Image 1: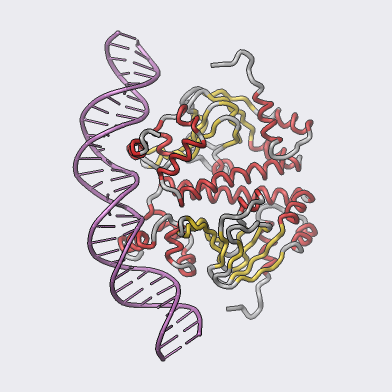
Image 2: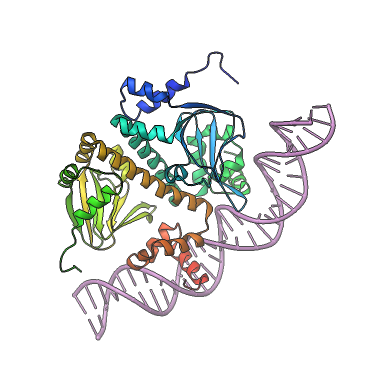
Length: 199
Length: 199
DNA sequence: TTTGTTTATTAAACCAGTTTAATGGTTTTG
DNA sequence: CAAAACCATTAAACTGGTTTAATAAACAAA
């Protein structure tokens, strides 16, 4: 599926960066040149265990899921959908082989910036360095609220919250991946849904 | 308890900052002047629900636990012990009243920097801004591995891991707080310990 | 010292999830 | 279009935790 006139996704990326901190137009424009466009088909893998993670990514459109294989079971850590930054941070930061997968659940457009380019631009621009700090801070806060919910809410409450906060996921992602994300088996999630009358 | 010659905790704090990024001696020395020394007695509260969180903190010595009251139950999110940074980040960032507690489990020494001072120094020094980014990145990675364990390890495995990684906690913190941190009731943790032969 | 308070353990009943397996519906593909 | 692959649901047996309550042990205070 494609709109007749393609959206300017690079512009969205710029807007995203600016939402964290002001960056001079020239610096920002220059920064955009480092981003490489990548189209992923449904089911295509961006990162697999053993690989080094040399890029930071931005999902322009589509959905990437981040998971790990634990005793043959997929354990979903996160879904990255339209207009967010992501990477496999442990491997990216430590420059060790990944133990995770990053895979598209649907046709997905991402932009990728090389680690060396990203780091150079942080060094060259205090504004971009701040963008880096604030975006990392936001990522921390998101995952923090997740830990908070994991430690104080029931599975049922977390299911209901996800249904409310990210209803789109239930359309675009198979239920067994959502179950895994919620820390449940597909059977367990099905029982909860039954109990709630298919809420 | 006190050593005959008091340790220079401010020097430890400087070393901590430098472990993230180089900062010119003069800038760092100047930065230290913003830190206010706070001594907390056992059980003393640093932050309680309803309060605004105007500082970022550093535990020089002792232990602070970070928790929330959920239907009358303490839900422990983290223990901050010697030589780490912490604050109630959601309230600090959003400047809304806290919904958490930060409380000392023992006699604790903390250094506090006002948010306005911290932000000014980030603006004035690119080096400090980078320190901010990298320390936030480290915080993210720590909490990320926690989510990973919560979603793929059993309670028993998480108990054993905590025992291995932070054995000191079991000496200085009551077991029911550790149980809460692990997402268990005190009874549940006791059963696991029994099963493992008081490992 | 004794008394009161806090903490850890145990037991028993219970429950929200798991595991395994079978069924049926839906989507993909040759 | 038919065949194959994938996915959600259900049932039944099971399990690792919870809840509640009682007991014991450790600690603090007077």
